[in-house]
Amino acid sequence: MSSEARKVYDEAIVIDGLNVSNWESDAVFEHLRAGNITAIEMSEQPVAITHGNARSFCDHPRNKEEEALKLLAEKGASWALRPSKGIDSPAEFPNLAEALANRGYKAEAIAKLLGGNWMSLFERVWNV
Image (spheres, rainbow, N blue to C red):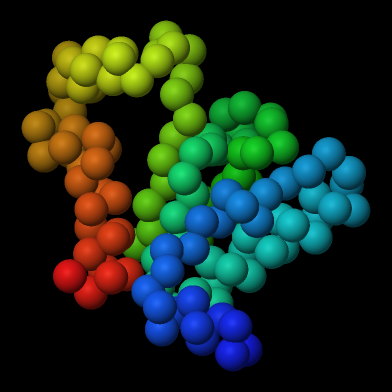
């Protein structure tokens, strides 16, 4: 591991895989897609994707391919979805909790989805 990578881990920095982002050009896209996979595979800490969706859900350069998302899950990482249709502002997030409850999600799962998973990631990376 490079000294730069070691410093990231020693300083307990949360790695945001979104910033190893995808771009329009096929050559650049392939290079950066591989960068996402590499960052997730090499990280000793969970990697975060701070705002993106699955590329299979919406084919947008910012969104991640299934391979990267599966690796995130395997490494215990967190992934924050970009708001989808029907959520136009943070003021509407309470509607999301209610909609999840109406669809049968348990309170514990909703709490994880609305921030609990992030708290867990920060606790693991920062050793708190």
